[in-house]
Length: 259
Ligand SMILES: Cc1cc2nc3c(=O)[nH]c(=O)nc-3n(C[C@H](O)[C@H](O)[C@H](O)COP(=O)(O)OP(=O)(O)OC[C@H]3O[C@@H](n4cnc5c(N)ncnc54)[C@H](O)[C@@H]3O)c2cc1C
Ligand code: FES
Image (cartoon, rainbow, N blue to C red; front, side, top):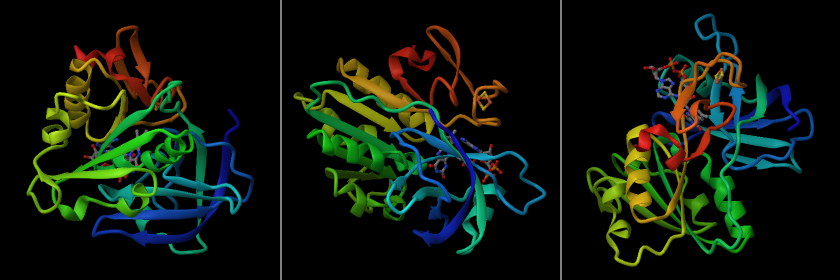
């Protein structure tokens, strides 16, 4: 797969709540084909404290306008600094990295389960599922209604269900307690998930018990981002695999954390 290593110009930073934002960038060159699940390594500019690039799922792409965007939650110095970038500033990116969510032939109904920053890969996935005529439900979980973001985007590609821990929006509880999972006739043939490890494990466990395939995109800590340093490995039934290279998307039955 062709890789881009280029400075990109900041178009704008759209703040969604007190710590999350969408970073819109303009590429100087044509953007190669991006698949749902692919990520970029972004260099945090003008900082002494953050040496390593930071990995982020690609949120959306506009090939015609050479625009690429990211949904970022500020949790530390790198993500805070990226949120302070002003229009016209330059930021260096390497992408597309990693593998992709798979869409099996004949799939009719898919469930997407996202929590926290784990919603980021699901605009591109929702878009592709819709193009293929697959009926999609997005189940999005957060602590409060303030964490439930980008729903206007998701609603272009499917129906939306929400859970919040405090009950301020949608059903009260975790995504795994949503009534969709309690139905006798679980109507989905394939489930895609991304979010905190504990959430993905719980979703994977629940879904595989129903005999349904589940793919998860792991967000292990990374350094190089392209398979050299081995700092991102995860145990699988075939030994340790690099999340940045063989992943980040894995069938949960392949992961050792399922057992
Ligand atoms: C493939 C992949 C895709 C990702 N996609 C997104 C995305 O779309 N949007 C987004 O906001 N974030 C995403 N992340 C997570 C993002 O890379 C981290 O939040 C970021 O690197 C933190 O950098 P920082 O300098 O702000 O934090 P640091 O100062 O490096 O760390 C702050 C705190 O967060 C913890 N931390 C750092 N990275 C992670 C991680 N990956 N998982 C759990 N805890 C972590 C550290 O241990 C520390 O306690 C993704 C990660 C991966 C591997
Ligand atoms: S981050 Fe270096 S091998 Fe994955």
